[in-house]
Each structure stands twice: as structure tokens, then as C-alpha cells.
Length: 183
Image (cartoon, rainbow, N blue to C red; front, side, top):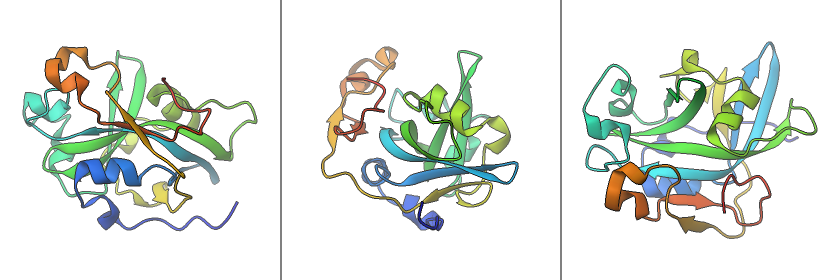
């Protein structure tokens, strides 16, 4: 595997949809016990801020969502269903990009599965303890990867409660990857 150089925080300081697309092909890295665990990002979802009814910040500014209102380029890690961690890249103003799936690259078992946000975080060892960390330095960072040759968009997964917002094409994925979490 080539040298993993962290992306600057400014990578996330753009339009949330643009960041969601640009994250495809980049590498998410978590150093655990001196070992780098890494995966190529193959699926993301954009959450546009307080006006987006599927976005956590639509319920207001809380202790849980405070990091989403901070500077771009930080991790927003939350627990869903009381058992699965999910990791997001904060783009600022209450918006973030959920990382939904990775292709395992380094420091992981050969049969590792990173399809789905809960599997992704379990595989990389990401927990709420990493919430709010900047994503440009160890132990958790984004590194330059290889962009996919094409990108597809669809409705986000699991946000039916958000009514019309659930149908918006804000999920992006690499159609050539076998590690994407949904159709």
C-alpha cells in the first residue's frame, strides 16, 4: 500500500454534496495499537444541515450534534439503535457526510466486510471516543485514494421518516465496488 498522507481539513470545507462525491475513492484510516487499519470509501450519504429532515441537526443543536456545527474536517461519530457506531465527515453549519461502506485495504482480515456504516466502524475500531477529532492526523484520518471511474446516486437508506427528504438522491456510490451496502 502506498504512503498514506492525510488530506487537509479544507477538503471538507466545501458544499456537502460535493464532499460526499469527492470522498468516494479516498481512504479512511484508523490507527489501533500501532497498526493502521484502512479502507477505500465506496459509499457515502450527504446530510445537508438543519433544513434537511433526515439530518440529525434538524432536531436542533444538542450535545450530540454540536460537532456538526463546528469547523469542517472533523469526525461526527454517533451510536444508532444503541449498538452500531456510524462515522461522518463534518462539512460545517450542521451538515455532514455519512461514510456508508469501505473496501478493506490494510491491517484487516482477508474476509473483512465494510459494507454498511455499522460494519465499517466495527472493522476499523471506530467508536464515540473518536467523536469530534480532526480528520487530518492520527489516530483517525482521511488519506488520498483513487477516484472511481464512475459515481451513481440514489435515495438515502433508512430515512423514510424524513418524508420528501428521504427520496432525494443524496447517496453516492462506486457502482464497480462489491462492497457497497445496498442496491
